[in-house]
Image (cartoon, rainbow, N blue to C red):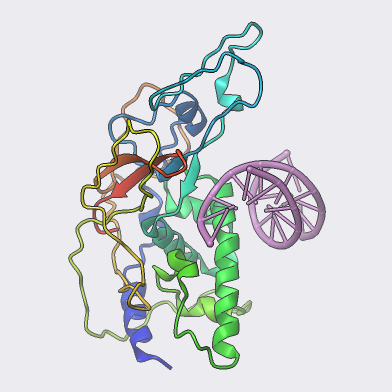
Length: 298
DNA sequence: AATATAATAT
DNA sequence: AATATTATAT
Protein backbone atom coordinates (compact mmCIF):
# COMPACT_ATOMS: atom_id res chain seq x y z
CA UNK A 1 0.00 0.00 0.00
CA UNK A 2 1.89 3.05 1.09
CA UNK A 3 5.52 3.02 0.43
CA UNK A 4 6.29 5.82 2.75
CA UNK A 5 5.38 3.51 5.50
CA UNK A 6 8.08 1.13 4.58
CA UNK A 7 10.50 3.97 4.60
CA UNK A 8 9.95 5.33 7.98
CA UNK A 9 9.40 1.92 9.21
CA UNK A 10 12.79 0.69 8.30
CA UNK A 11 14.36 3.69 9.80
CA UNK A 12 12.26 3.26 12.79
CA UNK A 13 13.27 -0.32 13.06
CA UNK A 14 16.88 0.57 12.84
CA UNK A 15 16.78 2.75 15.82
CA UNK A 16 15.33 0.13 17.97
CA UNK A 17 17.59 -0.22 20.90
CA UNK A 18 18.15 -3.67 22.11
CA UNK A 19 16.58 -4.47 25.41
CA UNK A 20 19.93 -4.40 27.04
CA UNK A 21 20.53 -0.96 25.81
CA UNK A 22 17.17 0.11 26.80
CA UNK A 23 17.01 -1.34 30.20
CA UNK A 24 19.61 0.68 32.01
CA UNK A 25 17.77 3.85 31.68
CA UNK A 26 16.03 5.38 34.53
CA UNK A 27 14.18 3.18 36.80
CA UNK A 28 14.79 5.75 39.39
CA UNK A 29 11.97 4.82 41.55
CA UNK A 30 12.53 6.85 44.60
CA UNK A 31 9.56 5.32 46.14
CA UNK A 32 7.07 7.39 44.29
CA UNK A 33 4.61 6.94 47.03
CA UNK A 34 6.91 8.53 49.48
CA UNK A 35 7.94 11.25 47.16
CA UNK A 36 4.43 12.11 46.29
CA UNK A 37 3.28 11.71 49.79
CA UNK A 38 5.69 14.30 50.97
CA UNK A 39 5.27 16.33 47.92
CA UNK A 40 8.92 16.03 47.21
CA UNK A 41 8.79 16.24 43.53
CA UNK A 42 12.46 16.53 43.36
CA UNK A 43 13.26 20.20 43.22
CA UNK A 44 16.24 19.42 41.13
CA UNK A 45 15.87 17.11 38.29
CA UNK A 46 13.68 14.24 39.00
CA UNK A 47 12.68 13.13 35.64
CA UNK A 48 9.18 12.00 35.92
CA UNK A 49 6.31 11.82 33.58
CA UNK A 50 3.89 14.63 33.46
CA UNK A 51 1.53 14.56 36.24
CA UNK A 52 -1.61 16.37 36.86
CA UNK A 53 -1.92 17.15 40.43
CA UNK A 54 -5.42 16.25 41.08
CA UNK A 55 -7.41 17.80 43.74
CA UNK A 56 -7.30 16.69 47.27
CA UNK A 57 -10.45 17.80 48.90
CA UNK A 58 -10.97 15.70 51.92
CA UNK A 59 -14.66 15.16 51.97
CA UNK A 60 -14.48 14.49 55.61
CA UNK A 61 -13.33 16.09 58.79
CA UNK A 62 -11.52 19.33 59.24
CA UNK A 63 -14.49 21.59 59.31
CA UNK A 64 -12.03 24.32 59.80
CA UNK A 65 -11.37 24.76 56.19
CA UNK A 66 -7.77 24.87 55.34
CA UNK A 67 -7.51 27.47 52.70
CA UNK A 68 -4.24 26.18 51.58
CA UNK A 69 -3.69 29.13 49.49
CA UNK A 70 -0.72 28.39 47.44
CA UNK A 71 0.47 25.39 45.72
CA UNK A 72 1.38 23.54 48.80
CA UNK A 73 -0.92 21.29 50.56
CA UNK A 74 0.84 20.37 53.65
CA UNK A 75 -0.25 17.08 54.95
CA UNK A 76 -1.73 18.29 58.09
CA UNK A 77 -1.74 15.68 60.62
CA UNK A 78 -3.72 16.77 63.19
CA UNK A 79 -6.65 15.73 64.42
CA UNK A 80 -5.94 13.47 67.20
CA UNK A 81 -5.73 9.95 66.06
CA UNK A 82 -4.32 10.58 62.69
CA UNK A 83 -0.93 11.88 61.87
CA UNK A 84 0.58 8.82 60.40
CA UNK A 85 1.62 7.41 57.12
CA UNK A 86 0.33 9.94 54.70
CA UNK A 87 1.79 7.91 51.95
CA UNK A 88 -0.76 5.27 52.36
CA UNK A 89 -3.67 7.53 51.95
CA UNK A 90 -2.48 9.86 49.32
CA UNK A 91 -3.26 9.51 45.71
CA UNK A 92 -0.84 9.82 42.95
CA UNK A 93 -1.37 12.63 40.56
CA UNK A 94 -2.86 11.74 37.28
CA UNK A 95 -0.37 10.80 34.71
CA UNK A 96 -0.42 12.82 31.58
CA UNK A 97 0.59 10.93 28.54
CA UNK A 98 2.62 13.28 26.48
CA UNK A 99 3.45 12.40 22.92
CA UNK A 100 6.94 11.71 24.07
CA UNK A 101 5.82 9.31 26.66
CA UNK A 102 3.48 7.69 24.25
CA UNK A 103 6.25 7.28 21.78
CA UNK A 104 8.29 5.45 24.30
CA UNK A 105 5.29 3.37 24.91
CA UNK A 106 4.81 2.54 21.28
CA UNK A 107 8.47 1.79 20.87
CA UNK A 108 8.44 -0.52 23.78
CA UNK A 109 5.40 -2.31 22.50
CA UNK A 110 6.94 -2.59 19.10
CA UNK A 111 10.11 -4.07 20.43
CA UNK A 112 8.35 -6.57 22.48
CA UNK A 113 5.86 -7.49 19.87
CA UNK A 114 2.22 -7.39 20.47
CA UNK A 115 2.29 -10.71 22.13
CA UNK A 116 4.75 -9.94 24.81
CA UNK A 117 3.60 -6.46 25.18
CA UNK A 118 2.03 -6.58 28.54
CA UNK A 119 1.90 -3.77 31.01
CA UNK A 120 4.71 -4.88 33.22
CA UNK A 121 7.13 -5.53 30.44
CA UNK A 122 6.23 -2.38 28.68
CA UNK A 123 6.69 -0.44 31.82
CA UNK A 124 10.10 -1.93 32.35
CA UNK A 125 11.22 -1.20 28.87
CA UNK A 126 10.06 2.31 29.06
CA UNK A 127 12.04 2.87 32.17
CA UNK A 128 10.26 5.94 33.12
CA UNK A 129 10.45 6.66 36.73
CA UNK A 130 7.24 6.96 38.53
CA UNK A 131 5.45 5.12 35.84
CA UNK A 132 3.37 2.37 37.27
CA UNK A 133 2.09 -0.78 35.79
CA UNK A 134 -1.43 0.46 36.12
CA UNK A 135 -0.53 3.55 34.20
CA UNK A 136 0.68 1.47 31.36
CA UNK A 137 -2.18 -0.94 31.61
CA UNK A 138 -4.69 1.78 31.36
CA UNK A 139 -2.97 3.33 28.44
CA UNK A 140 -2.53 0.01 26.76
CA UNK A 141 -6.18 -0.66 27.01
CA UNK A 142 -7.01 2.48 25.24
CA UNK A 143 -4.31 1.99 22.72
CA UNK A 144 -5.65 -1.39 21.83
CA UNK A 145 -9.02 0.05 21.24
CA UNK A 146 -7.44 2.59 19.01
CA UNK A 147 -5.68 -0.07 17.01
CA UNK A 148 -8.83 -2.04 16.70
CA UNK A 149 -10.70 0.92 15.48
CA UNK A 150 -8.08 1.54 12.88
CA UNK A 151 -8.15 -1.99 11.67
CA UNK A 152 -11.81 -1.85 11.27
CA UNK A 153 -11.56 1.32 9.36
CA UNK A 154 -8.88 0.23 6.99
CA UNK A 155 -10.60 -3.01 6.26
CA UNK A 156 -14.09 -1.75 6.05
CA UNK A 157 -15.64 0.47 3.53
CA UNK A 158 -14.18 3.74 2.55
CA UNK A 159 -13.72 6.15 5.27
CA UNK A 160 -14.77 9.66 4.75
CA UNK A 161 -12.47 11.12 7.27
CA UNK A 162 -9.15 10.77 5.65
CA UNK A 163 -7.41 10.23 8.87
CA UNK A 164 -7.60 10.23 12.55
CA UNK A 165 -10.03 12.58 13.98
CA UNK A 166 -8.93 14.83 16.71
CA UNK A 167 -10.28 12.24 19.02
CA UNK A 168 -7.11 10.28 19.02
CA UNK A 169 -4.78 13.15 19.10
CA UNK A 170 -2.32 11.43 21.26
CA UNK A 171 -2.25 8.18 19.40
CA UNK A 172 -2.01 9.91 16.12
CA UNK A 173 1.11 11.60 17.30
CA UNK A 174 3.16 8.53 16.90
CA UNK A 175 3.19 6.22 13.94
CA UNK A 176 1.63 2.89 14.41
CA UNK A 177 3.97 0.11 13.42
CA UNK A 178 2.63 -2.05 10.70
CA UNK A 179 2.46 -5.29 12.56
CA UNK A 180 0.26 -3.65 15.07
CA UNK A 181 -2.51 -3.48 12.64
CA UNK A 182 -2.81 -7.00 11.62
CA UNK A 183 -2.23 -8.77 14.83
CA UNK A 184 -2.02 -12.45 14.84
CA UNK A 185 1.20 -14.20 14.26
CA UNK A 186 1.32 -16.57 17.11
CA UNK A 187 3.69 -18.76 15.26
CA UNK A 188 7.00 -17.15 14.69
CA UNK A 189 8.15 -15.25 17.63
CA UNK A 190 10.67 -13.32 15.72
CA UNK A 191 9.01 -10.85 13.59
CA UNK A 192 10.95 -8.94 11.06
CA UNK A 193 14.42 -8.57 12.48
CA UNK A 194 15.00 -5.58 10.37
CA UNK A 195 14.23 -4.23 7.02
CA UNK A 196 17.26 -4.11 4.78
CA UNK A 197 15.78 -1.32 2.87
CA UNK A 198 17.81 1.72 3.47
CA UNK A 199 15.95 4.59 2.08
CA UNK A 200 16.65 8.19 2.44
CA UNK A 201 16.68 9.51 5.87
CA UNK A 202 14.71 12.43 6.84
CA UNK A 203 16.01 13.87 9.98
CA UNK A 204 14.57 16.64 11.91
CA UNK A 205 16.45 18.68 14.33
CA UNK A 206 13.93 19.05 16.93
CA UNK A 207 15.30 20.37 20.08
CA UNK A 208 12.46 20.64 22.35
CA UNK A 209 8.79 20.37 22.36
CA UNK A 210 6.20 21.28 24.77
CA UNK A 211 4.53 18.39 26.32
CA UNK A 212 1.29 19.72 27.50
CA UNK A 213 -1.19 22.30 26.71
CA UNK A 214 -2.88 23.96 29.53
CA UNK A 215 -6.13 25.71 29.54
CA UNK A 216 -5.87 29.28 30.50
CA UNK A 217 -7.79 29.41 33.66
CA UNK A 218 -9.55 32.29 35.17
CA UNK A 219 -9.20 31.09 38.66
CA UNK A 220 -6.62 31.56 41.29
CA UNK A 221 -5.05 34.72 40.07
CA UNK A 222 -2.02 33.79 42.02
CA UNK A 223 -0.49 31.59 39.51
CA UNK A 224 0.36 33.14 36.29
CA UNK A 225 0.98 30.54 33.72
CA UNK A 226 4.09 31.45 31.99
CA UNK A 227 3.82 30.20 28.54
CA UNK A 228 7.37 30.18 27.54
CA UNK A 229 7.47 28.60 24.22
CA UNK A 230 4.72 26.19 24.57
CA UNK A 231 3.74 25.05 21.20
CA UNK A 232 1.86 22.20 19.79
CA UNK A 233 3.43 18.88 19.40
CA UNK A 234 1.63 16.12 17.71
CA UNK A 235 -1.48 17.89 16.85
CA UNK A 236 -2.39 16.83 13.40
CA UNK A 237 -4.28 19.95 12.89
CA UNK A 238 -3.48 20.32 9.30
CA UNK A 239 -1.96 17.00 8.57
CA UNK A 240 -2.70 13.45 9.30
CA UNK A 241 0.62 12.43 10.54
CA UNK A 242 3.26 14.07 12.42
CA UNK A 243 6.53 13.14 11.00
CA UNK A 244 7.78 9.89 12.32
CA UNK A 245 10.47 10.98 14.65
CA UNK A 246 13.29 8.65 14.64
CA UNK A 247 14.97 9.19 17.82
CA UNK A 248 16.25 7.34 20.70
CA UNK A 249 17.95 8.09 23.84
CA UNK A 250 21.58 7.39 23.90
CA UNK A 251 22.10 5.34 26.92
CA UNK A 252 25.69 5.49 27.72
CA UNK A 253 26.04 3.58 30.84
CA UNK A 254 28.23 1.32 32.76
CA UNK A 255 27.92 -2.34 32.35
CA UNK A 256 26.24 -2.67 35.60
CA UNK A 257 22.92 -4.02 34.79
CA UNK A 258 21.51 -4.21 38.19
CA UNK A 259 18.37 -2.30 37.80
CA UNK A 260 16.55 -3.38 40.80
CA UNK A 261 14.32 -0.87 42.41
CA UNK A 262 16.77 0.30 44.93
CA UNK A 263 15.28 2.98 46.98
CA UNK A 264 17.84 5.31 48.23
CA UNK A 265 16.39 8.08 50.12
CA UNK A 266 18.87 10.78 50.57
CA UNK A 267 20.90 9.94 47.59
CA UNK A 268 20.99 12.34 44.71
CA UNK A 269 19.41 10.80 41.74
CA UNK A 270 21.40 10.58 38.64
CA UNK A 271 19.44 11.65 35.75
CA UNK A 272 20.89 10.06 32.72
CA UNK A 273 18.18 11.07 30.41
CA UNK A 274 18.19 14.16 28.31
CA UNK A 275 17.63 17.30 30.17
CA UNK A 276 14.19 18.20 31.04
CA UNK A 277 12.58 20.83 33.02
CA UNK A 278 9.44 21.12 34.78
CA UNK A 279 6.74 23.59 34.50
CA UNK A 280 3.71 23.85 36.57
CA UNK A 281 0.59 25.51 35.50
CA UNK A 282 -3.00 25.57 36.34
CA UNK A 283 -5.98 24.42 34.47
CA UNK A 284 -9.26 26.19 34.20
CA UNK A 285 -10.74 24.00 36.77
CA UNK A 286 -8.14 24.80 39.27
CA UNK A 287 -6.24 21.62 38.92
CA UNK A 288 -2.61 21.94 39.36
CA UNK A 289 -0.82 20.71 36.39
CA UNK A 290 2.65 19.55 36.74
CA UNK A 291 4.05 19.27 33.35
CA UNK A 292 7.38 18.00 32.43
CA UNK A 293 8.88 19.23 29.31
CA UNK A 294 11.33 16.81 27.95
CA UNK A 295 13.89 18.53 25.92
CA UNK A 296 15.91 16.44 23.66
CA UNK A 297 15.43 14.04 20.91
CA UNK A 298 12.59 12.32 22.44
C1' DA B 1 -12.11 12.31 26.70
C1' DA B 2 -8.34 10.81 29.45
C1' DT B 3 -6.95 8.33 33.21
C1' DA B 4 -7.78 5.78 37.45
C1' DT B 5 -9.61 2.24 39.99
C1' DA B 6 -12.34 -1.83 40.74
C1' DA B 7 -13.65 -6.26 39.19
C1' DT B 8 -12.49 -10.32 36.99
C1' DA B 9 -9.87 -13.64 34.62
C1' DT B 10 -5.52 -16.26 33.76
C1' DA C 1 0.00 -14.69 44.40
C1' DA C 2 0.96 -11.89 40.73
C1' DT C 3 -0.27 -9.96 36.71
C1' DA C 4 -3.43 -9.21 32.67
C1' DT C 5 -7.64 -7.83 30.97
C1' DT C 6 -12.04 -5.94 31.13
C1' DA C 7 -15.46 -3.01 33.13
C1' DT C 8 -16.62 0.98 35.50
C1' DA C 9 -15.93 5.30 37.80
C1' DT C 10 -13.99 10.01 38.21
